[in-house]
Length: 302
Image 1 (cartoon, rainbow, N blue to C red):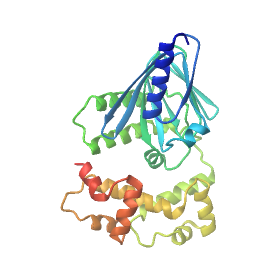
Image 2 (tube, rainbow, N blue to C red):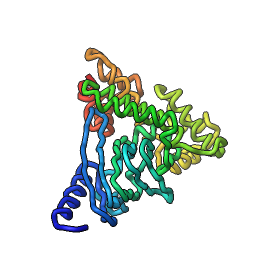
Image 3 (cartoon, helix red, strand yellow):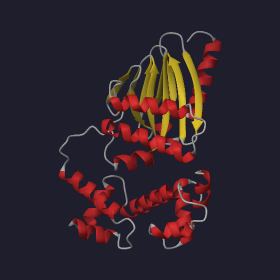
Image 4 (cartoon, helix red, strand yellow):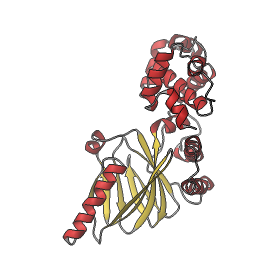
């Protein structure tokens, strides 16, 4: 890297990245450094347009420990090319391609020449809900030739250009993009292992009886033909706890109802219909998951 002014520009750019995108470190590559960052917040759509060249941006365990890992980055390549590494995979992105990066695991991005891309922050819970806790392939190049990739690009651009989007509409646009790309992110064998099929069957059973008071680990185990211990182990293998999963699933469905609920609909009634008999418990649990009370959440979706 040449002069002091270029060094300052480099440090300013890295500081911006750390402020907006989470904790990263970087090292210059051969050639003249290019670094610009524009941020845009369209309600639930939080994205950054990164222009970079002759630099390697990376995230180690140290940066992850000091930052927020509750996100996935969906990377839309706008111009030029980039190389992204994660989990022993390397995605080479050209104009129009897309890839996914998990903020909870180390990654590395190389911009050899001038490149421009959009990084869209997707909350981890949206990916988990859409993908039903199955493994997601990161640093996998989704080609611009795929119709779902083209549709996602179009949906992103139109959402960014629409200043009138409400909270509920921007969240729906975000979920639609994940839904469009999910089959490509979940490239797996058509024949799932028996354990995986069993896990998916349990999740379906929970969804089918999510409003039932009988929905407890003991009942789920009996209905699924396994011991309670096996059920706990199955969820633990996915980093989950059965009761916590049920509670979060109910809260997510409550949030879905709140986004379209009228002002005169009682919050306690909404919580009760999804298995929360005690309103104060519902309100506390909801705030822990979404950062705001059910009433405030409903107001924000207006």
